[in-house]
Image 1 (cartoon, rainbow, N blue to C red):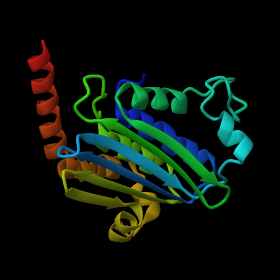
Image 2 (image 1 turned 90 degrees about the horizontal axis):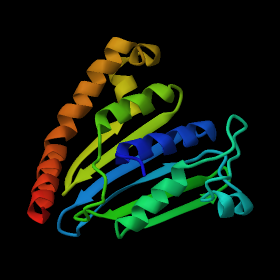
Image 3 (image 1 turned 180 degrees about the horizontal axis):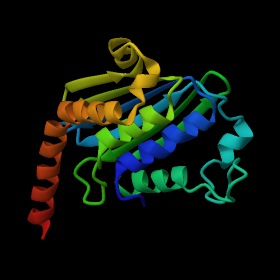
Length: 196
């Protein structure tokens, strides 16, 4: 199991980039009243044929030539299952691939989010020519980070990927979402200490 959900998001976005997507949308959500948290990643890359989709959750199957296994999706499915959640992946070649990961928010084994601002920055930097949209929804506090809007505001696509600009953008994203992630972390700590 990966220690943070952000690591799963990063892994799936990198898969989308390798699949030649030019548009990737990541929806990150946490609903306290419904006791769920999770994310979806949607891309418009080459997708997967039905025979590949059937094998994608086998840890010893990969389409990559650089290694002989692919653990990302099998580990994510295992995490969702362990945390009383759901996992699904659907794909229509050259149209849409969608990965859905949902977990019970209050489950003790549900991993923390991790550094979502850093994850956004790494995804943005790895995907310079495409459109990347991150939608954050924490108990109805919504934040949308759209790469096209950022590039238009800065006025220079290449400048957006300069390291000093990336650090400032990461800080902006962190300022937008950290207060809500911090509340989530405090509740997890309280939940854990109540069971100790």
